[in-house]
Picture 1 (cartoon, helix red, strand yellow):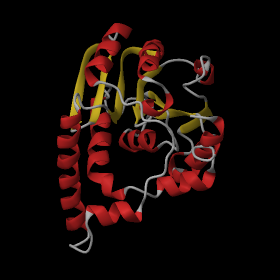
Picture 2 (picture 1 turned 90 degrees about the horizontal axis):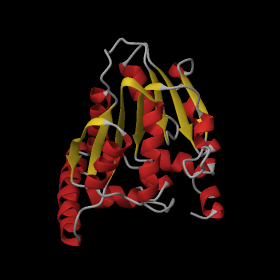
Picture 3 (picture 1 turned 45 degrees about the vertical axis):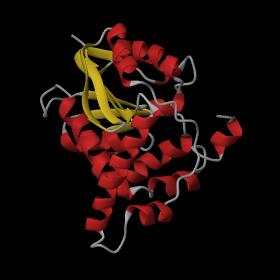
Picture 4 (picture 1 turned 180 degrees about the horizontal axis):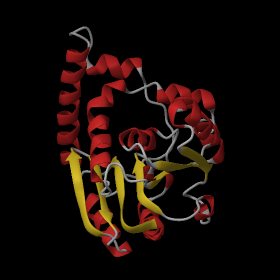
Length: 244
C-alpha cells in the first residue's frame, strides 16, 4: 500500500474511529474467534503472564485477554500512531497493564520496538494486511524467538478458500448465518444487506490472505509444536502453535 493511501486510512484518526465503530453485524464470528484465542493460551488463568499483541490496533484482543487474566500484562505493537493513541482511550481500566509501542511488520527492524520475550504472542486480523504470504513465513520465525518455553502463538485471521467455487459456498454460508443473526438481534427490523449498507467498508490496503495449510507448515518450520487450526468457520480461522 502506498504511503499516501496508508496515511488516509490507518494513519488518520477519523478513519480509525469510523472503522472501529463499524461491523457489529460480524460480532458472532469475531466473538468466537476472541474466545478461542483466550482459551488456547496454556498458562493458568491467574498466572502473571506477559503478552505481545502483534498488529494490535487499539488493543482489543489484548484487552480481552487482560480482562480474562487479572495478573497478565500486554505489549501492543502496531504501525499506526493514531491507532495506538486510541488504545488508552478505549481501555482506560487497563492503562497500568497495557503498553503501546509503534512498529511496522513491513520494516526489517520491527523487533527493535519490543523488548524481551513473552509467554504468549497473539494477533487478530492483522497479518494479512501487513505482509504478503511469503513474508509471514519469516515473521513466524521471528515470533518463535519471542515466545518463551511453554508459551504459544495464536492468530485469529482470515484465509483463502482453495477454489473459486468453494469461496462462493463459504460466502453464501457466512452471509446466511449472519443474516439470521442480524434479523434476530434487530427483532426482524433489519437484515444483513441493510446492516452492511449502513456500515460500508472502506479500502484500507490489500488482503493477502494465506492458504491455511501453508500457514501451519510455516509455523512447524519455525519450530512451533502442536500446530493446528484450533477453530474454523468458512474462511475465518484461529490457528497457532506452542513452544516446548
